[in-house]
Length: 572
Image: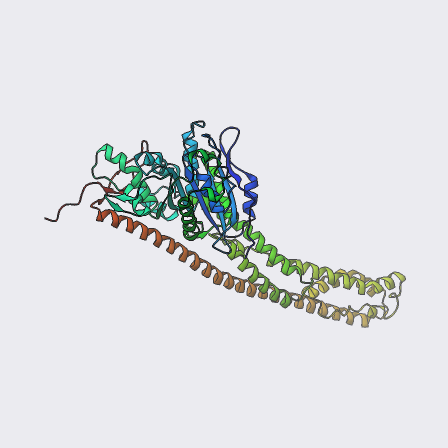
């Protein structure tokens, strides 16, 4: 298992540059590159000065960390990140994201608020919405960012119909937790005690009717129901007196309301237990490196004036991950093959290639995903064969030159210019010297032909010399045949190795594809189950599902699948 990353405190992940545009903090990205474990990402959003940071510090198990502040000014700017070992899941990292308070009067930029909210949705596996008081119409109106999500997020790179997109959002959006702070009411509806979740569902109930007022009332509720079918609610009493609220991070737990502490503990338990690993389209789990890539992709798209697209972000992330996986796998392969001493016999090369290629391929498959180009098939075995041949030929030539050095000395001294001198220029006996021995010997003999002919002219025993010439020609032809046979065997072995490599790649690809398909199927089944559950609940309450607009934000797109606020027709 990869070692966990534990930060001493939070750092800014996304901030605003000098020109007011969002920008990613390189230091935060460097931290994320060191997180090889799967990440569980919990983000919190809500109006400024509503106590978001306290809940995040509680999840971190710290009294201090994210800045709480003690005035009406918003302390958190941008998105701040804290990476910690997950307290309940070994081998996982908990990533906490505390976001800038929405609706800050000093900032006066609702567009920035919308992008902060959209990024929190895109990056998290659990989204906590923090509000004060009760879940009433005012609280719903402050959550208008949910109604605008389809204006700030796209699922598909190519335009599809909104019906498909609505369903797609469910697959990739986080689970939703509504934290209601300083709650003073009794949890009763029509005189009956209810749970916190029942209180939330009651607040999300739609009204019947199709007039403008009803549609405006229903819009945020319908969007929450559509986009976040997995919902949870926690209510919190005020932790201490109003005078001490500004010092919450300094007070000992004994100074806080025991009921508040119990509610905080239950909240943390739920988040730790029920928050899933962050995944992207296809059910691909996200680790720190991939998470950093997502942040860069989304923020870069927003800076360019475009709408962040899930498809495009995953493609960009896959490209970065697969390139890194390829480098890592090839380095592993090169290190293994580098242990061979060249020149080597072809059989030794082939065996080593099979072993190290299989190991490198498994390493690549573990890290890569959506490798549609099958980049690993373009690897270095052919280069290593060529390198081995070059080293082999160089070694053979050096040995042949060494063996013929004595002949050169005698030729210079004129020792061959006498009867029988040509017989002294017999070919060196090399035997089998690695893969290029025959070819090197052939080239060497051809290069020495001129010298041998010079000796022949000075040989007085012409008849005997002519016999040696014929023998030399026969040996040259035999050498050429051996060289050609050696080349044929090399080509044959290379083809066998390529076929073996192909079979290994196919085998591992099939396993990889089956794993990815299973993840995608589980993802789709979860989304469908949630959607059907929501539809069934609406139908039971007397709403009728029908096509057509069901409430559209100004300038926004309609959701083609919605529920009419008309009651079902009576059976009689």
